[in-house]
Image 1 (cartoon, rainbow, N blue to C red):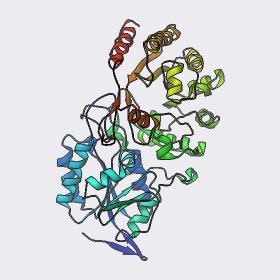
Image 2: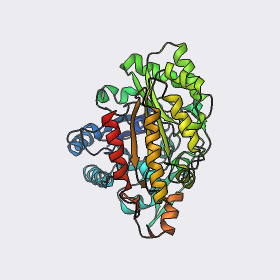
Image 3: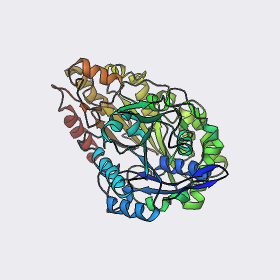
Length: 446
């Protein structure tokens, strides 16, 4: 290994790795925008950078070993994006992550190992304590912290979001949630060619676009405000469309997914993006999760004209009682009104709901069935209801649901939430299967 010094600045060879975040090679894979964005930042600071997505490899650990031996990085950034596949499945991505760390530490024992990503940001102390090969971790946004860490990696200052070891203890600096999105560095896609991801996915577009960060909502199960902060930070609309246009013209990308927690909040931002798409006559398609109470006849029509290919909703509550307990700050009537608006379009619509939420009763279960039937009826003319996704609640640390589950004895102080843990107590622990049967019958007969 070697380190260059240019004008007093230490230049390092850095490998950014997306660790396994899908269960099988045949499953949908998403372009790892986070590590490519950070690699682009490091490149702008003069570092020699390479990017690897283990999800693309038939033999991910063999490919990782080969990459380590050929590139021989001095520092390695590991992204733990997903801790498990959700969707009520019991599998965990912690196991392949642990194997990847062990392999790196064995092949290149002198390389610095730095971990980040959404999954890590939820369990920083737990993971650092349990994996001694990790030198540092970064919680949340890392555009500023990671380059600063590499400048003084032997003895870094207290940087925002930095996790480090002090004796046997793990120390954690509070993360930053104030990165100015006007300074957003567009990911350099030459570091990882989008061509590798084409024609893989059937459900979600494989290329993500960040239009904003932050979420001002306080849903009882959600960690977005914890990870990104509650203040909305929007990119300039022209910059968002610039990125889409370059990807479309240079790489032939026609379909995009906006990664925003809620795409159509605040009012006017998505509208501005759509007006810019139309002004440039850019023929692209896109989707993202939208808030029902921010839709009206005018903006629904605008979104469709500008290329919206799927209205994705996550109302989560199958009735007012569930909406209230989940802290959605949303009325049942607003969901049905939004459904009526989008049901008049030629755009596919998808709804996500939580099943067996706290306070579930026989009456709320029956109401949930009728609510699903209402949605299918609303969409019956155009038949543009793609599907309804039904899940139990994944219990995550720091959420209101976690506190409720603890108070109810569903989890306890020793419960390791790092591994798949769902809120699904009896007597309604089989409700999801009943609703899945209803949904699949309607999908088939429609």
